[in-house]
Image (spheres, rainbow, N blue to C red):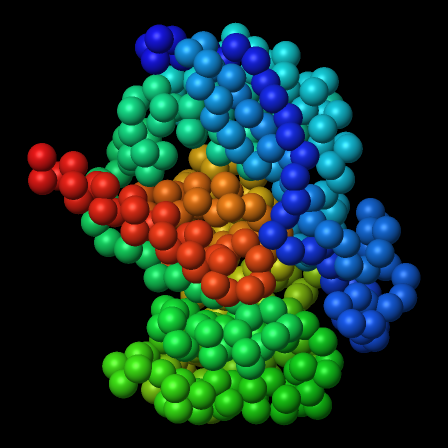
Length: 416
């Protein structure tokens, strides 16, 4: 019955994400904490509170042979910020899925992943399908094609995009959350490839003229030398959520100068600075980031600029890659939408000579994280986020183990 490639029925199952949805606009204003909560009223449309538990909606495709393949729909942590779609609303997503998607799905052929994505995930004349739906449903479609062919999802990606079967693992990037010191220690002890993110998302954490942030960078370097293995030499990646621009100003020269000083603070390490500034639109971000990148390159700095805000969809990523408006692009998979477009985004970055960081969000699920590992390995992205959650260990285990299982299986098949 595996030769039968049609969808027989659809199952929906509500679930939780790996962390919380946060109102970035409210947090930037400096709201207080009450334990794990943020105090005050939300600022961004769709948020009932500044911090809300993340939700997900699983979609199961019942195939003709009664096999059920799953994908998970969810949003990212900071919905409605940086040009992104509104915060995930499970009731809204369920209604669209039931009314607009289920009729397309029942009876659809899923043997070819790209064909199925093109036919099922196409937008209507009046509106675009929400990106969480495209993300979750494309996961299920990829798993359906993998089931039909008797392959892993990674092998299906290689087959349909005419890529060589991979042999190399992808560097893992862990994020610390607010428990920064404790989680940095975990990352160092586990010899994580890229660390620590740092969650530099407030004036308190960035400090006057960036002083608090620079002290944190120096502390991370010191801690690596204190407790890291003798040969451990990770890449240091810090997400500053636009605070360089907010504190120092938006003039590209000043931003490049500040980033170069941070690189000097961590001499000997490759430094990534994610979202140094938010210029409010994709076109402005491309223009100004191009200048910052050019200035850092002219200085011969070891620092690398990573774009996140205002670079969400495949079309956005294409603009940044063509303009070389970043050294590294975060391909935030739920914001891109279809898994197929995330693959295209990695390949687009590689073609343009720009680094491809296959990212996502702490609010994702174990299932979406495992599928992400297959996409990263198949496309040979430059790095992948260990997700979901903010506890470090869980994301490293889920993504790292899936990657290791996949590469071991492919190695086994090559030997046969």
